[in-house]
Image (tube, rainbow, N blue to C red; front, side):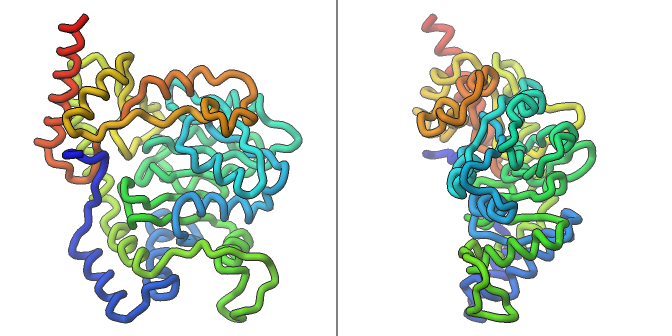
Length: 362
């Protein structure tokens, strides 16, 4: 594709840290940049503890294991999201249970969550979808652990509180299409000291630094590499710059698409969105996408709703009208920090031409 869905924004700062890590030979999960990255995340978000992980999906799996969620336990999550939360629940032997989303936020619907709670429900995963926070106050009121999946929402706020600080545990992804990236990578954030200690043990083969090669529990290797963390440290130090740059891209899209028959994803009055990938909804999505992609622009349909995947049919309880509606009409447009305005205009012009062609055809 001539115009990718996303692209990384790296500076001399990240290069400097990576060169330093390379020069010292620390390229595995050992090295100062892992701890520096974790400390920078805690300072940025005001949380007590951060654990860097190999990716965001493993961060979710680590949280579920630390909460003792296993065979037969139910975890409620939104019916429209990237598949990672459902896959993580399945990976630990749990049962993902889907709740619909709301039209006003595209995030998990607390009213539907209430209907899905049973004696087997052990947690709720709330996804801050594409940079928009979920509605946490009603979710927390149910008295279950709320896991905040902020994978796509670096820099967003809920009633003035930054995402990443809203659940008993929160995770971020630092995949290459995220505002803050390490290529791959993720992290877990919490203020719970005992939970942090347990997650660190699980993430490092079940052994401590104080007593290596002694294993009291079955652990795993969820660790981030020192090289990855070196990139991440530079990105966290540029956090506000990178988040604002994406929001500026979203504002530019708003301007150039304002006269076309499509609807920008909604933003609740209590939310401050941090644009991950600019998302819009339209009736003729597939037709418009076909034209745009033929021009070498990597715009994409949003994910299938999870209830539409045969793999997860057993997790369906009731109907998922809103999730399926948004899944069939929403479209992701190329977005990255400091995306050139001429590139944005090129994407918008292609969409406009597709609408004109459609009008002429019909």
